[in-house]
Length: 361
Ligand code: SAM
Image 1 (cartoon, helix red, strand yellow):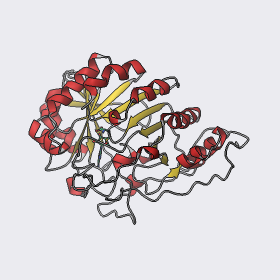
Image 2 (tube, helix red, strand yellow; image 1 turned 45 degrees about the horizontal axis):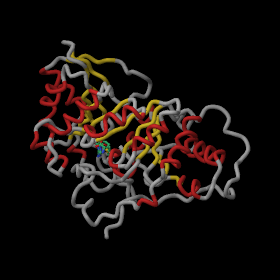
Image 3 (tube, helix red, strand yellow; image 1 turned 60 degrees about the vertical axis):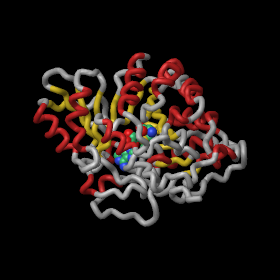
Image 4 (cartoon, helix red, strand yellow; image 1 turned 90 degrees about the horizontal axis):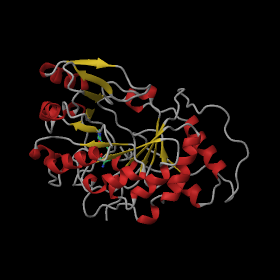
């Protein structure tokens, strides 16, 4: 059996006996070493996916022999809730459920129902394959919005990208189901890999103009160690905007809120808006407000991290809320990473980076 591709996890610092809390809560605002606030918590609820997107979970590695996490290692919904609640107390305003494919996690709507009691926006990123079946339950549970990944509008291109022969029509039907129950506006994310699906830029733009959904193009990133990333396969956002602008004139629109990752562009003729996420060519580390909780309860402050902080051990050793709060605060306050700002075409880190399917996109 193949080993899972995960980085070494740093040992827990906390040494309190089970059930014991530290005394005072952290004072003041939670700022990291670069004066960034924590605002967005991304929670990966499964490391499994029913797609094998070539840039994320390539078949050669994530095959029948791949050792996905056993159920006992996954954080339970109760454990996720405890961590989420503490993060919300520390300033988190938005929680995104992701994976793997989050809709593969059984009874995910039960978790959403619990999370929805917190004063936060709850969103979810999905490949859309189970949306038709689940949209109503997700909405009823309290999900606010959904982002659907779609890497092409031509069936043959999309099937090559997802590598499991999944048809575009079924994802579009999932998007329609989400819109029908009121999970709109829906963001539709397309990762572009040069030579693989960059011929889909204009067809996707044509399809989603006037739909009310927001199409966003994401630069292909060097996440993990399994996708064989090369800088020359990245399609810069500036090129995407130029190609669309040549057919449908665009104008820039300001950010909805500070730290928004997508740069927004509006069709001048009123056809709606698109977004571009330039994680490689215009890194946005300086305004990053995101923190990630992996499927097995490791906390990561960066998508490109090589090590996490083990909250599951704390949870299962009986740490009290105050100890968890202090640990979380210490992790954020000690954050200094800015990988994307210092990346070069030849960036090679010793050891392996965490996989996107494990940490959650
Ligand atoms: N299964 C869900 C989905 O398909 O959206 C959620 C998990 S997926 C890892 C989250 C997002 O990460 C998707 O939009 C996916 O396209 C994106 N992603 C995965 N690998 C990436 C990479 N190397 N560069 C940029 N985006 C990537």
